[in-house]
Length: 82
Length: 205
Ligand SMILES: [Zn+2]
Image (cartoon, rainbow over all chains, first blue to last red; front, side, top):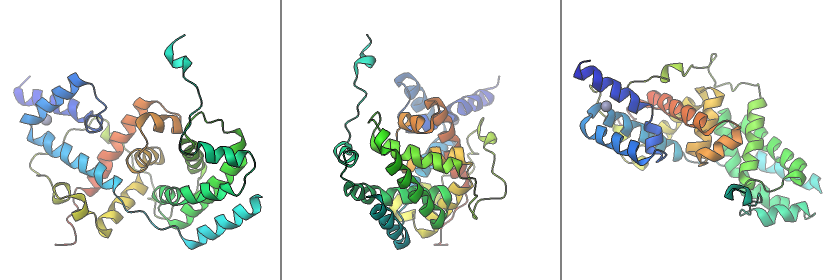
């Protein structure tokens, strides 16, 4: 196996675990392995940065206001509950 | 007996007293419960359904079920988790498709064995700049639209994990799937969403 192929295999293996990695749900040994690989791999750095940011953007979407129609419907329902 | 078995199955979460008050007949307290969760549930529904009308229906149906079944709730989980279990099962049962959803569901199979993107494309602006600099209405719209096009099983996982803030374990219990399954779906969903953002350049251009 050429060095390039080896690298690609490594990247692929890591790629499947990057979400666990950014969520801190990976054990220490694997975590170190990934961190070491990231030091030398441009491709995986870009990959992890975009994935991390995707997660971050999703968690920061602004809430929509509850429509008054819904509040009114819920109010009716609560009144009927007694 | 293992330590696990000794742990009481009663979860005294922040809603424990409120829920018990309602169960013992103080129906007026049900209003407090609704007030507390309607905003979060509506936003959960909006992300799942992609439009406010369906989100309203989801919230309404969820609270109707909460009221109906609260008597049987034994605090075996946090109330919030039980609430979302009800909401997600309604979501899963709803066959009606959002008018914004694509004709055909996208397949995430291609994300099973994914290689990192080509290094020739450097990290895009939206991934470099701080969230508050890039997350404008336009980008929020792109993300929301992308979420709605995810298959429901994946959409639920990414919404519960990354937007509603449930842990892997909690999400697994809510959806009655394994934690490993949650992780796989979450990863593929994130890869898909990332791909939908890939070419986003922003309105500044
Ligand atoms: Zn790599």
